[in-house]
Amino acid sequence: MREVDNTTMKIVVCVKQVPDSWAEKSLQPADNTLDRGSVDAVMNEIDEYAIEEALRLQEAHGGEVVVVSMGPDQAKDTVRKALAMGADSGVHILDDGLHGSDAAATSLALAAAIKGRDADLVILGCESTDARMSVVPAMVAERLGLPQLTFCNSVTVDGSTITTNRVTEYGYDVVEASLPAVVSVVEKINEPRYPSFKGIMAAKKKPVETLDLAGLGIAAGDVGLAAAWSVVEEAAARPPKAKGTIVTDEGAGGVAIADFLSAQKFI
Amino acid sequence: MAEVLVLVDHVDGNVKKVTYELLALAKRIGEPSAVFIGSGADAAIPGLAEHGAATVYVADAADLSAHPVAPKAELLAKLVAEKSPAAVLVPSSAEGKEVAARLAIKTNSGIITDAVDVAADGTATQSVFGGATVVKSRVAVGTPIITVRPNAAAPEVSPAAGARVEVSVELSDTAKSARITERVEQAKGGRPDLAEAAVVVSGGRGVGGEEGFGVIEALADALDGAVGASRAATDAGWYPHQFQVGQTGKTVAPQLYIANGISGAIQHRAGMQTSKTVIVVNKDPEAPIFELADFGVVGDLFAVVPQLTEEVGKRKG
Image 1 (cartoon, chains in turn red, green):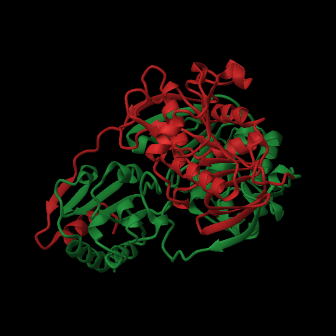
Image 2 (spheres, chains in turn red, brown):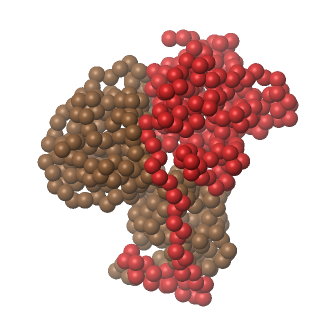
Image 3 (tube, one colour):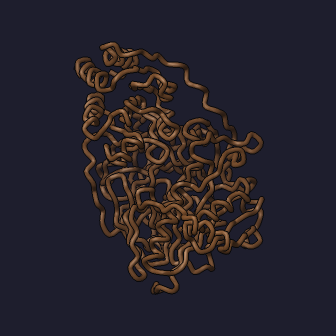
Protein backbone atom coordinates (compact mmCIF):
# COMPACT_ATOMS: atom_id res chain seq x y z
CA MET A 1 0.00 0.00 0.00
CA ARG A 2 1.60 3.23 -1.02
CA GLU A 3 1.52 6.20 1.25
CA VAL A 4 0.57 9.36 -0.60
CA ASP A 5 2.81 12.27 0.21
CA ASN A 6 2.79 15.79 -1.07
CA THR A 7 5.52 15.35 -3.61
CA THR A 8 4.26 12.27 -5.40
CA MET A 9 0.45 12.37 -5.63
CA LYS A 10 -0.34 11.90 -9.27
CA ILE A 11 -3.83 12.32 -10.62
CA VAL A 12 -4.81 11.33 -14.13
CA VAL A 13 -8.02 12.82 -15.49
CA CYS A 14 -9.60 11.28 -18.59
CA VAL A 15 -11.55 13.71 -20.73
CA LYS A 16 -13.52 13.39 -23.95
CA GLN A 17 -14.36 15.82 -26.70
CA VAL A 18 -18.00 15.55 -27.77
CA PRO A 19 -20.40 17.38 -30.06
CA ASP A 20 -21.89 20.47 -28.41
CA SER A 21 -24.98 19.35 -26.49
CA TRP A 22 -27.04 22.07 -28.19
CA ALA A 23 -26.13 20.69 -31.59
CA GLU A 24 -28.22 18.16 -33.48
CA LYS A 25 -26.19 14.96 -33.46
CA SER A 26 -26.24 12.38 -36.21
CA LEU A 27 -24.57 9.19 -37.40
CA GLN A 28 -22.53 9.20 -40.59
CA PRO A 29 -24.38 7.10 -43.19
CA ALA A 30 -21.14 5.54 -44.45
CA ASP A 31 -20.31 3.61 -41.28
CA ASN A 32 -22.90 4.60 -38.67
CA THR A 33 -20.28 6.25 -36.49
CA LEU A 34 -20.93 9.56 -34.78
CA ASP A 35 -20.44 12.54 -37.05
CA ARG A 36 -17.87 14.53 -35.10
CA GLY A 37 -16.85 16.76 -37.98
CA SER A 38 -19.84 18.84 -38.89
CA VAL A 39 -20.82 20.13 -35.45
CA ASP A 40 -19.02 22.24 -32.87
CA ALA A 41 -16.93 20.13 -30.52
CA VAL A 42 -16.55 20.85 -26.81
CA MET A 43 -15.18 19.17 -23.73
CA ASN A 44 -17.77 16.74 -22.33
CA GLU A 45 -19.46 18.85 -19.68
CA ILE A 46 -19.07 16.43 -16.79
CA ASP A 47 -15.32 16.14 -17.51
CA GLU A 48 -14.95 19.78 -16.44
CA TYR A 49 -16.10 18.67 -13.01
CA ALA A 50 -13.59 15.81 -13.06
CA ILE A 51 -10.75 18.23 -13.82
CA GLU A 52 -11.97 20.62 -11.13
CA GLU A 53 -12.00 17.83 -8.56
CA ALA A 54 -8.46 16.84 -9.53
CA LEU A 55 -7.28 20.44 -9.21
CA ARG A 56 -8.89 20.78 -5.79
CA LEU A 57 -7.18 17.59 -4.61
CA GLN A 58 -3.90 18.91 -5.99
CA GLU A 59 -4.39 22.17 -4.09
CA ALA A 60 -5.03 20.20 -0.90
CA HIS A 61 -2.36 17.50 -1.28
CA GLY A 62 0.14 18.71 -3.84
CA GLY A 63 1.36 16.61 -6.75
CA GLU A 64 0.56 16.74 -10.46
CA VAL A 65 -2.49 16.47 -12.68
CA VAL A 66 -2.15 14.77 -16.06
CA VAL A 67 -5.02 14.90 -18.53
CA VAL A 68 -5.54 12.02 -20.96
CA SER A 69 -7.88 12.12 -23.94
CA MET A 70 -8.59 9.73 -26.78
CA GLY A 71 -9.94 11.38 -29.88
CA PRO A 72 -9.28 12.56 -33.43
CA ASP A 73 -6.96 15.47 -34.13
CA GLN A 74 -9.46 18.13 -32.99
CA ALA A 75 -9.48 16.61 -29.50
CA LYS A 76 -6.21 18.41 -28.82
CA ASP A 77 -8.33 21.52 -28.16
CA THR A 78 -9.98 19.73 -25.29
CA VAL A 79 -6.60 18.72 -23.88
CA ARG A 80 -5.50 22.37 -24.05
CA LYS A 81 -8.65 23.48 -22.26
CA ALA A 82 -7.86 21.10 -19.41
CA LEU A 83 -4.33 22.52 -19.28
CA ALA A 84 -5.79 26.03 -19.26
CA MET A 85 -7.92 25.11 -16.25
CA GLY A 86 -4.72 24.07 -14.49
CA ALA A 87 -3.69 20.53 -15.41
CA ASP A 88 0.10 20.19 -15.68
CA SER A 89 0.52 18.04 -18.78
CA GLY A 90 -1.50 16.20 -21.35
CA VAL A 91 -1.61 12.93 -23.26
CA HIS A 92 -3.51 12.81 -26.55
CA ILE A 93 -4.24 9.31 -27.80
CA LEU A 94 -4.49 9.79 -31.53
CA ASP A 95 -4.61 7.11 -34.21
CA ASP A 96 -6.91 6.69 -37.22
CA GLY A 97 -7.11 3.02 -36.28
CA LEU A 98 -9.18 4.02 -33.25
CA HIS A 99 -12.03 5.38 -35.38
CA GLY A 100 -15.24 3.57 -34.57
CA SER A 101 -13.92 2.02 -31.37
CA ASP A 102 -16.52 0.76 -28.94
CA ALA A 103 -16.42 1.40 -25.18
CA ALA A 104 -14.36 -1.74 -24.56
CA ALA A 105 -11.67 -0.59 -27.00
CA THR A 106 -11.75 2.95 -25.59
CA SER A 107 -11.18 1.59 -22.11
CA LEU A 108 -8.33 -0.55 -23.46
CA ALA A 109 -6.61 2.50 -24.94
CA LEU A 110 -7.15 4.65 -21.84
CA ALA A 111 -5.90 1.90 -19.53
CA ALA A 112 -2.81 1.41 -21.68
CA ALA A 113 -2.07 5.14 -21.52
CA ILE A 114 -2.53 5.20 -17.75
CA LYS A 115 -0.53 2.05 -16.91
CA GLY A 116 3.05 2.69 -15.99
CA ARG A 117 2.40 6.29 -15.00
CA ASP A 118 2.06 5.39 -11.30
CA ALA A 119 -1.18 7.28 -10.91
CA ASP A 120 -2.62 7.46 -7.39
CA LEU A 121 -5.99 8.42 -8.70
CA VAL A 122 -7.76 8.23 -12.06
CA ILE A 123 -10.76 10.55 -12.33
CA LEU A 124 -13.38 10.53 -15.08
CA GLY A 125 -16.76 12.14 -15.65
CA CYS A 126 -19.50 9.57 -15.04
CA GLU A 127 -20.97 9.82 -18.52
CA SER A 128 -20.42 11.47 -21.90
CA THR A 129 -23.22 13.44 -23.50
CA ASP A 130 -22.79 11.78 -26.90
CA ALA A 131 -22.78 8.06 -26.13
CA ARG A 132 -24.35 8.34 -22.65
CA MET A 133 -23.32 4.81 -21.73
CA SER A 134 -21.74 5.43 -18.28
CA VAL A 135 -19.55 2.34 -18.74
CA VAL A 136 -16.02 3.56 -19.44
CA PRO A 137 -15.06 4.37 -15.82
CA ALA A 138 -16.09 0.88 -14.66
CA MET A 139 -14.29 -0.69 -17.62
CA VAL A 140 -11.11 1.29 -16.89
CA ALA A 141 -11.25 0.11 -13.26
CA GLU A 142 -11.74 -3.46 -14.46
CA ARG A 143 -8.78 -3.27 -16.84
CA LEU A 144 -6.47 -1.63 -14.32
CA GLY A 145 -7.58 -3.95 -11.49
CA LEU A 146 -8.22 -0.95 -9.25
CA PRO A 147 -11.03 -0.17 -6.81
CA GLN A 148 -13.94 1.56 -8.47
CA LEU A 149 -15.56 4.55 -6.69
CA THR A 150 -18.01 5.91 -9.22
CA PHE A 151 -20.91 8.39 -9.40
CA CYS A 152 -19.29 10.45 -6.63
CA ASN A 153 -20.77 13.68 -5.41
CA SER A 154 -17.96 14.05 -2.89
CA VAL A 155 -14.34 12.89 -2.71
CA THR A 156 -11.93 13.10 0.22
CA VAL A 157 -8.35 11.84 0.34
CA ASP A 158 -6.65 11.29 3.69
CA GLY A 159 -3.18 9.77 3.42
CA SER A 160 -3.69 6.70 1.25
CA THR A 161 -7.42 6.34 1.91
CA ILE A 162 -10.05 7.75 -0.39
CA THR A 163 -13.63 8.20 0.83
CA THR A 164 -16.48 9.08 -1.51
CA ASN A 165 -20.25 9.48 -1.51
CA ARG A 166 -21.71 7.39 -4.34
CA VAL A 167 -25.08 8.68 -5.55
CA THR A 168 -27.77 6.00 -5.47
CA GLU A 169 -31.51 5.84 -6.11
CA TYR A 170 -32.23 5.96 -2.38
CA GLY A 171 -29.64 8.60 -1.42
CA TYR A 172 -25.96 7.69 -1.29
CA ASP A 173 -23.44 5.07 -0.20
CA VAL A 174 -20.22 5.99 1.55
CA VAL A 175 -17.53 4.07 -0.33
CA GLU A 176 -13.94 3.83 0.80
CA ALA A 177 -10.77 2.32 -0.64
CA SER A 178 -7.00 2.47 -0.50
CA LEU A 179 -5.24 4.34 -3.28
CA PRO A 180 -4.65 3.89 -6.16
CA ALA A 181 -8.25 3.99 -7.31
CA VAL A 182 -10.56 4.92 -10.19
CA VAL A 183 -13.18 7.58 -9.49
CA SER A 184 -16.01 9.01 -11.57
CA VAL A 185 -17.82 12.19 -10.63
CA VAL A 186 -21.33 13.54 -11.11
CA GLU A 187 -22.17 17.13 -11.90
CA LYS A 188 -23.22 18.03 -8.39
CA ILE A 189 -19.73 17.49 -6.98
CA ASN A 190 -18.34 20.97 -7.43
CA GLU A 191 -18.33 24.15 -9.55
CA PRO A 192 -15.64 24.03 -12.25
CA ARG A 193 -13.39 27.06 -12.56
CA TYR A 194 -13.20 29.01 -15.81
CA PRO A 195 -9.74 29.03 -17.39
CA SER A 196 -8.17 32.42 -16.64
CA PHE A 197 -6.37 34.36 -19.34
CA LYS A 198 -3.13 33.55 -17.56
CA GLY A 199 -4.08 29.88 -17.57
CA ILE A 200 -4.86 29.92 -21.28
CA MET A 201 -1.49 31.47 -22.07
CA ALA A 202 0.37 29.06 -19.77
CA ALA A 203 -1.41 26.11 -21.39
CA LYS A 204 0.31 26.79 -24.69
CA LYS A 205 3.66 25.90 -23.11
CA LYS A 206 2.60 22.85 -21.15
CA PRO A 207 3.77 19.50 -22.57
CA VAL A 208 1.34 17.34 -24.52
CA GLU A 209 2.44 13.84 -25.47
CA THR A 210 0.78 12.26 -28.51
CA LEU A 211 0.45 8.49 -28.41
CA ASP A 212 -0.56 6.20 -31.25
CA LEU A 213 -1.42 2.52 -31.10
CA ALA A 214 2.22 1.51 -31.41
CA GLY A 215 3.08 3.87 -28.59
CA LEU A 216 0.38 2.26 -26.45
CA GLY A 217 1.47 -1.26 -27.35
CA ILE A 218 -1.98 -2.07 -28.73
CA ALA A 219 -2.50 -4.21 -31.83
CA ALA A 220 -4.51 -2.49 -34.58
CA GLY A 221 -6.81 -5.50 -34.78
CA ASP A 222 -7.95 -5.00 -31.18
CA VAL A 223 -9.55 -1.58 -31.66
CA GLY A 224 -11.49 0.44 -34.20
CA LEU A 225 -14.69 -0.17 -36.08
CA ALA A 226 -13.89 -3.63 -37.43
CA ALA A 227 -12.92 -4.89 -33.98
CA ALA A 228 -16.00 -3.57 -32.22
CA TRP A 229 -17.83 -6.15 -30.15
CA SER A 230 -21.21 -4.72 -31.06
CA VAL A 231 -22.40 -3.24 -34.34
CA VAL A 232 -24.99 -0.73 -35.42
CA GLU A 233 -27.01 -2.43 -38.11
CA GLU A 234 -29.26 0.43 -39.05
CA ALA A 235 -30.03 3.93 -37.96
CA ALA A 236 -32.87 6.21 -38.96
CA ALA A 237 -34.26 9.52 -37.88
CA ARG A 238 -37.24 9.04 -35.63
CA PRO A 239 -40.37 9.59 -37.75
CA PRO A 240 -41.75 13.04 -36.97
CA LYS A 241 -44.62 12.98 -34.54
CA ALA A 242 -48.07 13.58 -35.98
CA LYS A 243 -49.26 17.04 -35.03
CA GLY A 244 -51.38 17.02 -31.89
CA THR A 245 -54.37 19.10 -30.88
CA ILE A 246 -53.57 22.46 -29.31
CA VAL A 247 -56.33 24.55 -27.76
CA THR A 248 -56.35 27.87 -25.92
CA ASP A 249 -57.68 27.93 -22.37
CA GLU A 250 -60.90 29.89 -22.10
CA GLY A 251 -61.86 28.58 -18.68
CA ALA A 252 -62.18 24.89 -19.49
CA GLY A 253 -58.63 23.95 -20.48
CA GLY A 254 -58.28 21.48 -17.62
CA VAL A 255 -61.57 19.83 -18.54
CA ALA A 256 -60.40 19.52 -22.16
CA ILE A 257 -57.31 17.65 -21.05
CA ALA A 258 -59.39 15.39 -18.82
CA ASP A 259 -61.61 14.62 -21.83
CA PHE A 260 -58.50 13.70 -23.82
CA LEU A 261 -57.22 11.48 -21.01
CA SER A 262 -60.60 9.71 -20.85
CA ALA A 263 -60.63 9.16 -24.58
CA GLN A 264 -57.12 7.70 -24.34
CA LYS A 265 -58.19 5.50 -21.45
CA PHE A 266 -55.80 7.02 -18.93
CA ILE A 267 -58.69 7.78 -16.55
CA MET B 1 -33.51 -24.05 -25.02
CA ALA B 2 -30.73 -21.62 -24.16
CA GLU B 3 -30.99 -19.71 -20.91
CA VAL B 4 -31.21 -15.95 -20.75
CA LEU B 5 -29.88 -14.50 -17.50
CA VAL B 6 -31.83 -11.57 -16.04
CA LEU B 7 -30.25 -9.63 -13.18
CA VAL B 8 -32.99 -8.93 -10.62
CA ASP B 9 -33.34 -5.31 -9.51
CA HIS B 10 -34.66 -5.37 -5.95
CA VAL B 11 -34.44 -3.87 -2.48
CA ASP B 12 -34.31 -6.61 0.17
CA GLY B 13 -36.50 -8.91 -1.90
CA ASN B 14 -38.90 -6.20 -3.12
CA VAL B 15 -38.59 -6.75 -6.85
CA LYS B 16 -38.79 -3.68 -9.07
CA LYS B 17 -41.17 -3.66 -12.02
CA VAL B 18 -38.34 -3.36 -14.53
CA THR B 19 -37.22 -6.90 -13.63
CA TYR B 20 -40.55 -8.33 -14.81
CA GLU B 21 -40.22 -6.30 -18.02
CA LEU B 22 -36.80 -7.86 -18.60
CA LEU B 23 -38.17 -11.35 -17.95
CA ALA B 24 -40.79 -10.74 -20.65
CA LEU B 25 -38.03 -9.74 -23.09
CA ALA B 26 -35.87 -12.67 -22.01
CA LYS B 27 -38.70 -15.04 -22.90
CA ARG B 28 -38.50 -13.91 -26.55
CA ILE B 29 -34.88 -14.98 -26.71
CA GLY B 30 -34.75 -18.15 -24.64
CA GLU B 31 -35.60 -19.55 -21.24
CA PRO B 32 -35.47 -16.82 -18.55
CA SER B 33 -33.28 -17.45 -15.51
CA ALA B 34 -33.40 -14.76 -12.85
CA VAL B 35 -30.20 -13.96 -10.97
CA PHE B 36 -31.02 -12.75 -7.46
CA ILE B 37 -28.11 -11.23 -5.53
CA GLY B 38 -28.67 -10.12 -1.94
CA SER B 39 -31.10 -10.88 0.83
CA GLY B 40 -34.86 -11.49 0.56
CA ALA B 41 -34.98 -14.26 -2.06
CA ASP B 42 -37.91 -15.97 -0.33
CA ALA B 43 -40.07 -12.88 -0.87
CA ALA B 44 -38.92 -12.41 -4.46
CA ILE B 45 -39.10 -15.91 -5.94
CA PRO B 46 -42.90 -16.27 -6.28
CA GLY B 47 -43.17 -13.06 -8.32
CA LEU B 48 -40.16 -13.99 -10.45
CA ALA B 49 -41.63 -17.42 -11.15
CA GLU B 50 -45.02 -15.93 -11.98
CA HIS B 51 -43.40 -13.61 -14.52
CA GLY B 52 -41.49 -16.29 -16.37
CA ALA B 53 -38.35 -17.27 -14.47
CA ALA B 54 -37.76 -20.98 -14.97
CA THR B 55 -34.78 -20.82 -12.62
CA VAL B 56 -33.81 -18.37 -9.91
CA TYR B 57 -30.10 -18.33 -9.10
CA VAL B 58 -29.75 -17.03 -5.55
CA ALA B 59 -26.51 -15.59 -4.20
CA ASP B 60 -26.91 -14.08 -0.77
CA ALA B 61 -23.36 -13.90 0.59
CA ALA B 62 -23.01 -10.62 2.47
CA ASP B 63 -19.86 -9.52 0.71
CA LEU B 64 -21.63 -9.45 -2.65
CA SER B 65 -23.43 -6.34 -1.43
CA ALA B 66 -20.66 -4.93 0.77
CA HIS B 67 -18.65 -3.72 -2.22
CA PRO B 68 -19.95 -1.79 -5.22
CA VAL B 69 -20.48 -3.36 -8.64
CA ALA B 70 -17.46 -5.67 -8.97
CA PRO B 71 -18.81 -8.63 -6.92
CA LYS B 72 -22.01 -8.80 -8.96
CA ALA B 73 -19.96 -8.76 -12.16
CA GLU B 74 -17.80 -11.63 -10.88
CA LEU B 75 -20.83 -13.72 -9.96
CA LEU B 76 -22.44 -13.12 -13.34
CA ALA B 77 -19.17 -13.93 -15.12
CA LYS B 78 -19.10 -17.27 -13.33
CA LEU B 79 -22.67 -18.01 -14.40
CA VAL B 80 -21.93 -16.97 -17.98
CA ALA B 81 -18.96 -19.34 -18.06
CA GLU B 82 -20.98 -22.21 -16.58
CA LYS B 83 -24.32 -21.79 -18.36
CA SER B 84 -23.37 -20.28 -21.75
CA PRO B 85 -26.57 -18.21 -21.86
CA ALA B 86 -27.93 -16.78 -25.09
CA ALA B 87 -27.84 -13.31 -23.52
CA VAL B 88 -27.63 -11.43 -20.23
CA LEU B 89 -30.25 -8.72 -19.60
CA VAL B 90 -29.56 -6.11 -16.93
CA PRO B 91 -31.69 -3.13 -15.90
CA SER B 92 -30.31 0.18 -17.19
CA SER B 93 -29.73 1.68 -13.76
CA ALA B 94 -26.40 3.32 -12.90
CA GLU B 95 -25.31 0.18 -11.05
CA GLY B 96 -26.74 -2.13 -13.70
CA LYS B 97 -24.75 -0.48 -16.46
CA GLU B 98 -21.52 -0.72 -14.49
CA VAL B 99 -22.10 -4.38 -13.61
CA ALA B 100 -22.81 -5.05 -17.29
CA ALA B 101 -19.71 -3.09 -18.29
CA ARG B 102 -17.33 -5.08 -16.10
CA LEU B 103 -19.05 -8.33 -17.11
CA ALA B 104 -18.47 -7.43 -20.77
CA ILE B 105 -14.72 -7.00 -20.22
CA LYS B 106 -14.50 -10.17 -18.11
CA THR B 107 -16.26 -12.28 -20.74
CA ASN B 108 -14.90 -10.49 -23.85
CA SER B 109 -18.45 -9.77 -24.89
CA GLY B 110 -20.14 -6.88 -26.60
CA ILE B 111 -22.43 -4.66 -24.53
CA ILE B 112 -25.41 -2.61 -25.65
CA THR B 113 -26.82 -0.10 -23.18
CA ASP B 114 -30.23 1.54 -22.80
CA ALA B 115 -32.10 -0.76 -25.14
CA VAL B 116 -35.78 0.18 -25.50
CA ASP B 117 -36.63 -3.12 -27.16
CA VAL B 118 -34.97 -6.49 -27.68
CA ALA B 119 -36.01 -8.92 -30.42
CA ALA B 120 -35.96 -12.70 -30.34
CA ASP B 121 -32.71 -12.78 -32.30
CA GLY B 122 -31.05 -10.43 -29.79
CA THR B 123 -31.27 -7.30 -31.95
CA ALA B 124 -31.62 -4.31 -29.66
CA THR B 125 -33.37 -1.05 -30.42
CA GLN B 126 -31.82 2.09 -28.99
CA SER B 127 -33.15 5.62 -28.98
CA VAL B 128 -30.13 7.95 -29.16
CA PHE B 129 -29.35 11.64 -29.42
CA GLY B 130 -32.24 12.56 -27.18
CA GLY B 131 -34.64 10.41 -29.17
CA ALA B 132 -33.82 11.97 -32.54
CA THR B 133 -32.32 8.79 -33.98
CA VAL B 134 -33.52 5.20 -33.65
CA VAL B 135 -30.82 2.55 -33.93
CA LYS B 136 -30.85 -1.21 -34.32
CA SER B 137 -27.75 -2.87 -32.99
CA ARG B 138 -26.48 -6.29 -32.09
CA VAL B 139 -23.62 -7.81 -30.20
CA ALA B 140 -21.09 -9.34 -32.56
CA VAL B 141 -18.69 -11.01 -30.13
CA GLY B 142 -19.20 -13.16 -27.06
CA THR B 143 -22.38 -13.36 -24.98
CA PRO B 144 -24.73 -10.43 -25.73
CA ILE B 145 -24.95 -8.23 -22.65
CA ILE B 146 -27.81 -5.79 -22.94
CA THR B 147 -28.94 -3.17 -20.44
CA VAL B 148 -32.61 -2.36 -20.85
CA ARG B 149 -34.50 0.81 -19.98
CA PRO B 150 -37.70 0.73 -17.91
CA ASN B 151 -40.94 0.62 -19.89
CA ALA B 152 -39.33 -1.29 -22.77
CA ALA B 153 -41.87 -4.09 -22.51
CA ALA B 154 -44.96 -4.94 -20.50
CA PRO B 155 -44.55 -7.46 -17.69
CA GLU B 156 -46.26 -10.72 -18.63
CA VAL B 157 -47.85 -13.18 -16.28
CA SER B 158 -46.26 -16.37 -17.56
CA PRO B 159 -45.98 -18.88 -14.72
CA ALA B 160 -42.77 -20.90 -14.72
CA ALA B 161 -41.02 -23.19 -12.28
CA GLY B 162 -38.88 -20.57 -10.51
CA ALA B 163 -36.58 -23.37 -9.32
CA ARG B 164 -34.21 -22.02 -6.69
CA VAL B 165 -30.52 -22.75 -7.26
CA GLU B 166 -28.00 -21.48 -4.70
CA VAL B 167 -24.87 -20.06 -6.31
CA SER B 168 -21.74 -18.45 -4.96
CA VAL B 169 -18.41 -17.10 -6.14
CA GLU B 170 -15.00 -16.74 -4.55
CA LEU B 171 -14.49 -12.97 -4.84
CA SER B 172 -11.14 -11.63 -5.99
CA ASP B 173 -9.27 -9.11 -3.83
CA THR B 174 -9.95 -6.50 -6.50
CA ALA B 175 -13.70 -7.04 -6.17
CA LYS B 176 -13.40 -6.33 -2.46
CA SER B 177 -11.04 -3.38 -2.81
CA ALA B 178 -13.76 -0.72 -2.52
CA ARG B 179 -15.91 -1.03 0.61
CA ILE B 180 -19.38 0.37 1.23
CA THR B 181 -19.12 1.62 4.80
CA GLU B 182 -22.53 3.26 5.10
CA ARG B 183 -25.84 3.44 3.26
CA VAL B 184 -27.71 6.71 3.61
CA GLU B 185 -31.35 6.92 2.63
CA GLN B 186 -32.68 10.32 1.83
CA ALA B 187 -36.35 11.25 1.97
CA LYS B 188 -38.04 10.04 -1.17
CA GLY B 189 -41.73 10.10 -0.49
CA GLY B 190 -44.31 7.58 -1.61
CA ARG B 191 -44.54 8.34 -5.32
CA PRO B 192 -43.46 5.89 -8.02
CA ASP B 193 -39.80 5.92 -9.04
CA LEU B 194 -39.34 8.56 -11.74
CA ALA B 195 -37.31 6.33 -14.05
CA GLU B 196 -39.96 3.57 -14.02
CA ALA B 197 -43.24 5.47 -13.61
CA ALA B 198 -46.03 5.00 -16.13
CA VAL B 199 -47.14 8.61 -15.60
CA VAL B 200 -44.86 11.61 -15.08
CA VAL B 201 -46.09 15.13 -14.33
CA SER B 202 -43.37 17.76 -14.67
CA GLY B 203 -42.96 21.41 -13.81
CA GLY B 204 -40.61 23.96 -15.30
CA ARG B 205 -39.76 27.65 -15.18
CA GLY B 206 -43.44 28.53 -15.51
CA VAL B 207 -44.10 27.09 -12.06
CA GLY B 208 -42.34 30.15 -10.69
CA GLY B 209 -41.10 28.82 -7.36
CA GLU B 210 -40.99 26.05 -4.79
CA GLU B 211 -44.57 26.61 -3.60
CA GLY B 212 -45.92 26.32 -7.14
CA PHE B 213 -44.80 22.70 -7.27
CA GLY B 214 -47.64 21.83 -4.92
CA VAL B 215 -49.94 22.14 -7.92
CA ILE B 216 -47.73 19.76 -9.92
CA GLU B 217 -47.58 17.24 -7.07
CA ALA B 218 -51.36 17.29 -6.67
CA LEU B 219 -51.84 16.33 -10.32
CA ALA B 220 -49.15 13.63 -10.09
CA ASP B 221 -50.87 12.17 -7.03
CA ALA B 222 -54.28 12.25 -8.73
CA LEU B 223 -52.80 10.18 -11.57
CA ASP B 224 -50.61 7.96 -9.32
CA GLY B 225 -47.62 9.34 -11.14
CA ALA B 226 -44.12 10.59 -10.44
CA VAL B 227 -43.08 14.23 -10.36
CA GLY B 228 -40.40 15.53 -12.70
CA ALA B 229 -38.78 18.92 -13.05
CA SER B 230 -36.89 20.80 -15.72
CA ARG B 231 -33.29 21.85 -15.25
CA ALA B 232 -34.39 25.47 -14.83
CA ALA B 233 -36.58 24.50 -11.91
CA THR B 234 -34.00 22.31 -10.17
CA ASP B 235 -31.15 24.76 -10.74
CA ALA B 236 -33.34 27.44 -9.14
CA GLY B 237 -33.77 25.17 -6.13
CA TRP B 238 -37.53 24.79 -6.59
CA TYR B 239 -37.37 21.01 -6.63
CA PRO B 240 -34.66 18.46 -5.71
CA HIS B 241 -32.07 17.57 -8.36
CA GLN B 242 -32.89 13.86 -8.43
CA PHE B 243 -36.20 14.73 -10.12
CA GLN B 244 -34.62 16.56 -13.01
CA VAL B 245 -35.69 15.22 -16.40
CA GLY B 246 -33.33 16.02 -19.22
CA GLN B 247 -29.96 15.55 -20.84
CA THR B 248 -28.03 15.90 -17.59
CA GLY B 249 -30.81 14.44 -15.47
CA LYS B 250 -33.03 11.42 -15.90
CA THR B 251 -34.35 10.03 -19.16
CA VAL B 252 -37.94 8.81 -18.93
CA ALA B 253 -40.30 7.09 -21.36
CA PRO B 254 -43.62 6.88 -19.55
CA GLN B 255 -47.00 6.10 -21.05
CA LEU B 256 -48.07 9.66 -20.18
CA TYR B 257 -45.92 12.77 -19.75
CA ILE B 258 -47.53 16.05 -18.74
CA ALA B 259 -45.23 19.07 -19.11
CA ASN B 260 -46.34 22.22 -17.28
CA GLY B 261 -44.59 25.54 -17.70
CA ILE B 262 -41.72 23.91 -19.60
CA SER B 263 -40.55 25.51 -22.83
CA GLY B 264 -38.99 22.36 -24.24
CA ALA B 265 -35.37 23.21 -24.93
CA ILE B 266 -33.33 20.38 -26.41
CA GLN B 267 -31.85 19.68 -22.97
CA HIS B 268 -35.27 18.76 -21.61
CA ARG B 269 -36.65 17.09 -24.74
CA ALA B 270 -33.68 14.72 -24.71
CA GLY B 271 -34.97 13.36 -21.42
CA MET B 272 -38.63 12.73 -22.36
CA GLN B 273 -38.94 12.75 -26.13
CA THR B 274 -39.92 9.09 -26.42
CA SER B 275 -42.84 9.27 -23.97
CA LYS B 276 -45.87 7.58 -25.52
CA THR B 277 -48.40 10.38 -24.94
CA VAL B 278 -47.38 13.95 -24.21
CA ILE B 279 -49.61 16.68 -22.83
CA VAL B 280 -48.38 20.27 -22.64
CA VAL B 281 -49.62 23.25 -20.67
CA ASN B 282 -47.78 26.52 -21.33
CA LYS B 283 -48.63 30.23 -21.53
CA ASP B 284 -46.48 30.65 -24.62
CA PRO B 285 -48.03 29.30 -27.82
CA GLU B 286 -44.58 29.36 -29.47
CA ALA B 287 -42.95 27.10 -26.87
CA PRO B 288 -41.05 24.36 -28.77
CA ILE B 289 -42.48 21.67 -26.52
CA PHE B 290 -45.87 21.99 -28.28
CA GLU B 291 -44.22 20.19 -31.21
CA LEU B 292 -44.14 17.06 -29.08
CA ALA B 293 -47.69 17.41 -27.73
CA ASP B 294 -50.43 14.97 -28.51
CA PHE B 295 -52.68 17.43 -26.71
CA GLY B 296 -51.77 20.90 -25.55
CA VAL B 297 -53.38 23.83 -23.82
CA VAL B 298 -52.09 27.37 -24.19
CA GLY B 299 -52.88 28.90 -20.85
CA ASP B 300 -51.90 29.58 -17.27
CA LEU B 301 -50.90 26.33 -15.61
CA PHE B 302 -52.18 27.63 -12.28
CA ALA B 303 -55.67 27.75 -13.77
CA VAL B 304 -55.49 24.67 -16.00
CA VAL B 305 -53.69 22.16 -13.77
CA PRO B 306 -55.87 22.47 -10.63
CA GLN B 307 -58.95 22.19 -12.85
CA LEU B 308 -57.49 19.09 -14.48
CA THR B 309 -56.61 17.60 -11.10
CA GLU B 310 -60.19 18.11 -9.91
CA GLU B 311 -61.62 16.55 -13.09
CA VAL B 312 -59.34 13.54 -12.74
CA GLY B 313 -60.49 13.10 -9.15
CA LYS B 314 -64.14 13.21 -10.23
CA ARG B 315 -63.73 10.77 -13.09
CA LYS B 316 -61.60 8.27 -11.25
CA GLY B 317 -64.33 8.08 -8.62
